[in-house]
Length: 212
Image (cartoon, rainbow, N blue to C red; front, top):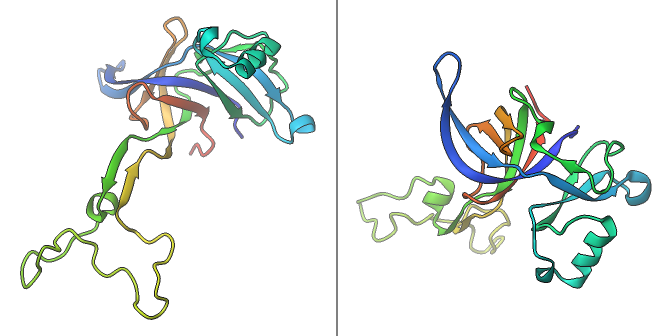
């Protein structure tokens, strides 16, 4: 069950050394305090979730409905609104701030973000196809996928067929990343390994649900 969740921004990767002088690759996430704008409960909304905002945004850059929503909650306008599904929201209230201190070193987390967009790609790059022969009559088909279906029956391509197309720019979750350091003073979170998305991308950090 998801009990902790917070939003951050990917700053990039670096490395740190542990007490045994072993190097550890880490991703640095900037996690500024998130403000609770709305609490959704099963008896009212059918599910448990927190609607949160983070950062600061000038009021004149918000629409009137957005301003009204923030004013009703008594929360300063933020750069975005996001819903975090949690198993239990009984301990949360509107206006409450959630910081990086909800996580601690050694804890396992799942990180979700939109992966880097790679543009239009062929089957060799997108799906790892082998490609066709380099000789013996192969003419300008070296990187083509080859036969993709039948002619008369069913005379169509089935949905889900591995074909060329747009690669990346999709929601990706990396599971069971270890928290190396949670620095509340500098609002930074260091997790071991890489996380999806480009530098500056928004990431959602949750406690690991498949921790082994």
